[in-house]
Amino acid sequence: MDFLQQLNPTPFMLMLLIGIIALLESLALVGLLVPGVVLITAASSLAGHQEIAVSWVLAAAFLGAISGDLLSFRLGYWENGRVLRRWPLSQYSGWVIRGQRFFDRYGAYSVFIGRFIGPVRPIIPLVAGMMRMSPVTFLGANIGSALLWAPAYTLPGYWLGQTWQQRLALPAGLEIALVTLAACIVLLAVLFSWGRLQTSRQGTVYRWSLLAVKRLPLLRRPWLAMSQHGDVPVATLLLLVLSVGGLSACTLWVMGQQGSTPLDASIQQLFDWLRNDILMHLSSTLASISDPYGLCALLAPWGIWILTQGYWALLGHWLIALSGIGLLNSLGTVLIGRERPLGTQQLADSMAYPSAHISSVVVVVGLTAGFVAARLERAQRVWVYWAAIATVLPIALADLVLGVHWFTDLVGGALLGLMVCALIRLSWQQRSHADVWLPWQWLLLASGVMLIARMAWLPAV
Image 1 (cartoon, rainbow, N blue to C red):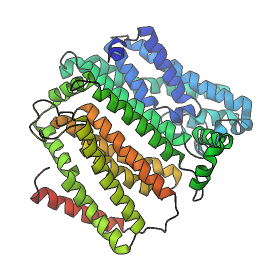
Image 2: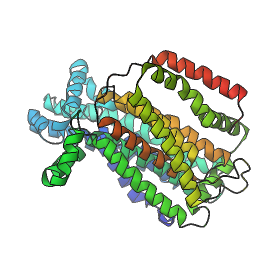
Image 3: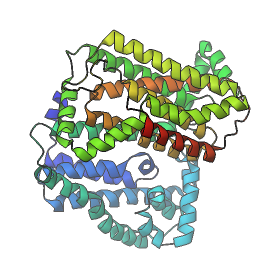
Image 4: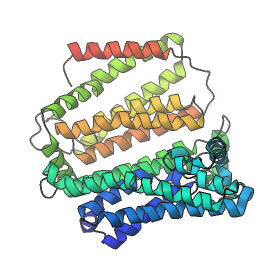
């Protein structure tokens, strides 16, 4: 909190930051890993909030975008085909192939058009250099597209930074809560985008893990055991390590506080200010859908199908996950004994940390995403995980609107749920299993009917 409150970059540092983000967003391959749109919007908002001249913001983004494309073009022009044999492009040659197809289709116009298309934006300048495009033609397309790109990507954030304080009439002292939430979202996006690539078989984390196994004989046996049925699940192992470490740190922080933390108080004050009848109704609906009755209604058709088809291993893992998260939630709330936000009448007789609601939702949604993604191609799995995140996030925010949990309760619950997901997935991946066939269209329909029945006839928990 003290660090964030003292964080006040100078105008020069902000312009430099905007230029660097724009450069990285346009740099070969790097632009695929960096969430440039989120970062440049945040930096532009800070510039607008500090009332820095918009011309400086546009100039910084313009120069950064041009520089990134020029560096990529020069790399492709000088290195030609050799660039594909150099790290890290040697690990992601598929992206270059996509860029070559795009370039073959649109020719010189691809540099201008590609600036605004995410998947090929940082690849097209590299490909243009490899294809020996005229430097003069490239420079013209580069400057022309950057003239449009810079205002399109910076002005929305800049105007938001200029006007949000006045238009929202935000009470004093709540800026830190907004900055913290935005920083958390950006950090998670960066970690997720980076982690999903680095834990693949061609990724750095996987190769470092393999190198450690070769040097440490104690690790060889478990590594070989996990690799018998495919690639070693490095991503799941990393998730387990991060969730256990994060849960331990968050729990120690909560236990060291008397009641809520300063961050909890700031964020709860923000949601108290945001609360209105519409948000309360939406939050109550989300809470009903994801409470124990709602989760049972959603899972019942799937459990019945799995039971009737004799998929005992799958059923056993799900039962262990659900019973395990229930036991850990009960144990955590008893040992820590943290009270809920003051003035909360609903669930006032139960403890807050970790959030049993969010941990249960994370287990259900996370395990579903894990089992579904395992049956897809690696390139398609990311969309399943993003869908899981988009499902859990509104439910967590609903708890803050209703005032039934502190922010750190939700963080602890989510980390606990992720830990259970990682353990279950590791157990499942230890052995080969027969293909599980699920008529998911009919099961989804049955879950929807059960959920409607739950909301119509059962009270909220």
